[in-house]
Length: 112
Length: 115
Image (cartoon, rainbow over all chains, first blue to last red; front, side):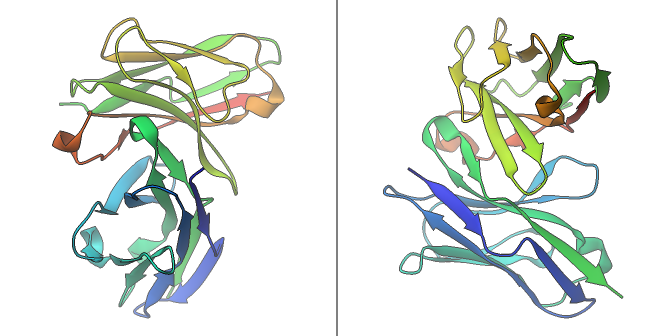
């Protein structure tokens, strides 16, 4: 069975500091991985995805993630965060029939 | 192009009442999904559909029914609402195969409270 674990439920950080949101996955088949962002009282928006090829994936809003097969990880990073990055971030893995299996989410709080 | 829309946006039900949530997409997607979001649990799949007239159970299907009579619509029904069904419900859709690069498109959500 496939699963996703997000290692931090909350991450507080100061504005302009770097941030890393951690995600580990479990899968016995080829993996397709995603990061989604949810701003307060909104739906989910795709940040980036890994399907194949380069293990460093760049997404929107300056975010990037690195796929590490040996460590079964797909951590999300941003070198300098803004107040507007305050949101909940979800890591997900693709299952059969394109279903998404989500982690529990990480709430990023950016403080001035 | 409206994408994925959900009706209603908010609803309060009493225990035992029934209701239907409507999801509509205008992208001609084959696959559609219903998820529920609860604090600390991420999104969990309730039911999904891989085409008109087909439905299948997801991770947490109990207490819900679905129908996909038209390709663009996916209905989620609660026959007898329970407080445990208080949640935010999201509908999503995507297209089959690499044409859509597996991205799911989400609706804005329906916030349901059962008292």
